[in-house]
Amino acid sequence: MTETSAVTVSAVAAASTVRKATIRDIKPILSLINAYAAQGLMLPRTEFDMSENIRDFSVFYKGENLAGCGALHFYTPTTAEIRSLAVAPEGTGCGIGRAIVGALEQEARDNDIEAVFAFTYVTEFFARLGFQEVERGELPLKAWKDCLRCPKFQNCDEIAVLKRLKALSGPFATERATLIQLREHSV
Ligand SMILES: CC(C)(COP(=O)(O)OP(=O)(O)OC[C@H]1O[C@@H](n2cnc3c(N)ncnc32)[C@H](O)[C@@H]1OP(=O)(O)O)[C@@H](O)C(=O)NCCC(=O)NCCS
Image (cartoon, rainbow, N blue to C red; front, side, top):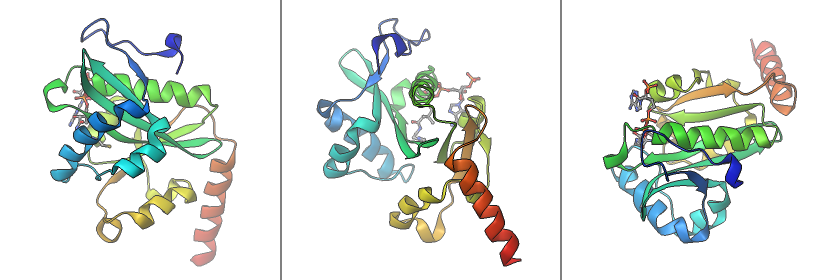
């Protein structure tokens, strides 16, 4: 993310911005995410997995301390998932989550992404940011590759939410059409 596209949050320290993560952010990100994972609120991450995916991540620091993180993962040339979103417990309610999602959305727009989606328990938070609940079947078929690896695959209770950034035209539209056709043929 360029300096000009970094999102500043007025509700917290003026110097606080969202920036792209680097390999040096892995340890604090792991601490933050895995503390929530221990409460069953997020999926745990490993150092190996983080190293592979660190370029998806953006971070928000308050001084020396990591206050929040989130990741944008591309699925198709037109769709991306917002995931691994976490704000440190002492920093919630100050607009940090909104700032991180805003920065991830901007990153998506910079890449001509048409829609971003998330699987979440905090639907109200995403609703405040303009996301709508959708049927899981509305999401790109590729999203299921991660679901297949997830320990909660058999009894997943997360809710799918989606925000359109512009009119759908690319593979997402094609995949949706394919899904609709498959459903119609299976009835
Ligand atoms: C969910 C989470 C990211 C929200 O971050 P945050 O910095 O507290 O959120 P913000 O302060 O930016 O809130 C933005 C808006 O959402 C609302 N909101 C935030 N969390 C909410 C919640 N749990 N339930 C309902 N509304 C919520 C806020 O009131 C605010 O509303 P506004 O439009 O009236 O201002 C944070 O609480 C968190 O990390 N939770 C634990 C991990 C988790 O569940 N991550 C999500 C994985 S998908």
